[in-house]
Length: 381
Image (cartoon, rainbow, N blue to C red):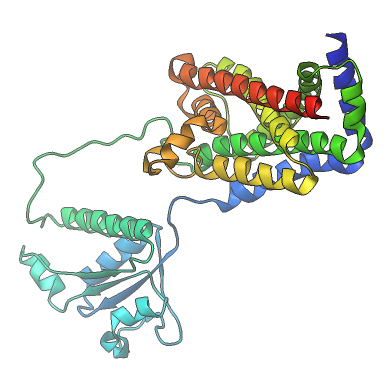
């Protein structure tokens, strides 16, 4: 134990002396938190919509206002497709609505026929043509659903629905009634940051030993592979805890996150997850021969998998096989479940016990693989 603590003190002393690494250890996570936190938006907003109204009646104007009242659409305009506020200028009526989509001016167009208001007042159905840009399938689906829901709501206000529903669902959004995207993005971002940066620092420290030749002194000392890994790992686990405290507090202050339910899964799961991150960094550092290889290993094996295969942005059930199988061994996946439960759901241990168990299992696996690889290195040298 004394040797492990001595190795830990040595690593912490080297970390403190390296002013650049010390600054980057907190500046890079902060920049990642701010950039990803403010840049990632899953809900489509400010969608340019082009309206072609052949009816020019108060009823058609009311329907158009209802579409824009959703706060999802903005009026599409350009030199060739200006916004027309006056009914006197009817030249825009004869323009091809498809052209607005082809030229990228609008993501959708709505064409209201000349007999729109007359048929509505007579209790008849009126066909409104909607063209949607399908180059982005998800965005097209969102636009289609918004226009359908708005049209249904508009018709219900005038009591002219052609086929009234027999079943009326009463929908209540659970956990996040305000539909704040930050409640989904930021807890997942905590996992991404705490997976990438502690592992990167650890792998760089391990590679630095090789590049400077000090690893040979370690081999010649009485330290065995387990003591070396535990000593380095403990030092960067403490650094990772500092990063976690910094990021969790800052994220909560900026986006107004607060813990719900039992906080102990987050308090216990965070050190376990950081241990997995540090062990992953040690594994990459043991296998890398230089700093460039370590950066590539952390970027490809760490960052990309945590970003794409952890459920941070894309639902896990949307990941095709065999990548869906690979997602089962991504520790960030399980920590995301813990953070989102701690900040959004609040179910506690009953909802995250399996994720906690998987973090422990994956940590033991990473430690054993790193131990065996380092042992082979010591024997070969």
